[in-house]
Image (cartoon, rainbow, N blue to C red; front, top):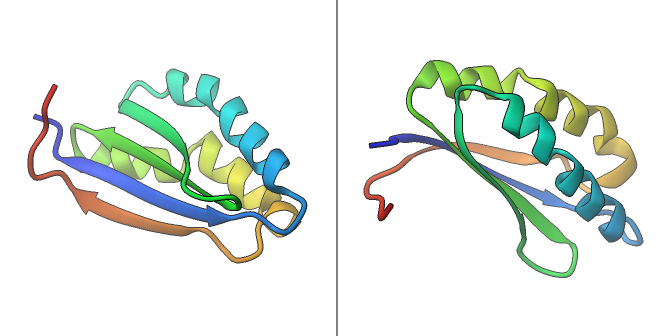
Length: 98
C-alpha cells in the first residue's frame, strides 16, 4: 500500500487564477517523468485556491519530488503567481481504496 503523500495548497494572486491553473496542468508531463511518484493530482479548491496531492511508496520518492522539477518551477514562479508562499505538508496515508 502507498503510505506517503504530499498535500500542497497554493493561493493565486488576484487576476492570476487562470495562469495558476494552466501552470498546474502543464506540470502533468513532469509528474509523469518521476518514476517514484505513484499518483499526482492538480486540484482547484476554490476560485483562487489550488492544490496538488501526490503519493509515493517511500520517503525517498517523496523527498525526490520535493527537490524535483515541479517544485523548482513552482518556486520559480511563486512571486509572480501566488499571493502567499505555497503550503506543503507531508502526510501519511492511512487507508486506500484502489
